[in-house]
Image (cartoon, rainbow, N blue to C red; front, side):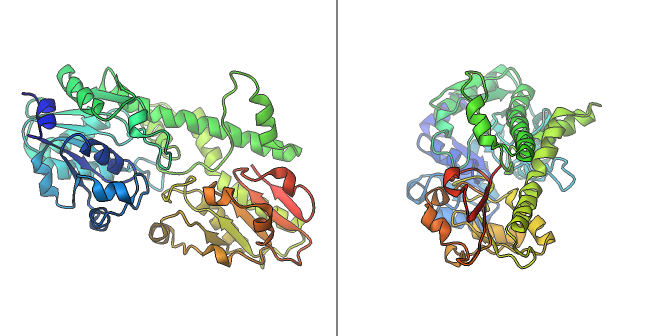
Length: 438
């Protein structure tokens, strides 16, 4: 009986290393079919899961409370599993080079608890070659075992879209790969248990790694083009979204929009690809150009807040400004690599210290990562300028009366910056509003 059959019979277990926005939903999905160990270094997070709380809001408290996943912060429990999935973050350093510390650390922990006959599948987004050239040597060193003889490896890039209730693990075609045909077949069968959309067998681990890193790079470049158009059309006095709506009537026009590009995927993955390209002697032109534009958009938004305050004849340094939204994307509590912080920092340069409101964001994470104390929505009043930075559902529901109530009644002009264009622009085109959006 092979490993796949042993997993089905309950004789063997699957482990999930890293229980964040990606790893936890995977663990929960597999637990509906087979026995699962969910491991994470963060004891506080494990405590929340054990008490039936889902801090990621990806599956909800009720699902967490009833899942059969064995949540643990004890690495020794990994010895009870034979099929391991590694889903840890892969951020970048301050100099925008890949920070492989999490995936290397996970490989060390797993190597120290690896048993013969195991298969390890990495899901973390990396540049081609990381699995076989960096992770495998760590696994071998820590375990004393030989890859290809005592254990096998594969790669299956995560495609979960945090906060998205439509495109889930089960509904997205899963790319799978293995170091040999036998491993590939087992990996494909195991993921086939939970991925209803089916699996795509990549011809090699490096092909699978490359496929993932270019998915987000392509999206990043397309959004950068939209952001550049927004800058150009703003100078021309043309509304960018109106232009895009008109252009979108052609069947092959791609539906991308301007915005802040943050998070741990789109705003990070292109740097992994360009880093590897540099090692091979090629300096990226298009990819890095797109990154430069997207990395500058927070500053650009802040500058336009200031310009419009001046237009409104409001003293910039004493202006009362509020920002709605702090997460890197809508309807998701994750604040990692949020570009809203760039707006905040740039406003600080002008002597403006904005109130930041986000009922969806992880307050503790915002405090720990950025030193930001999130305000309550009740504090949003007597404003000179309001910046809607993230398209949370709670903000989309705000009508004109709610927007009006945020501003100083005595102001002749009210600056409203709608970064994502979630409001009906026609309602705010006349006095007392100065309305601006990307």
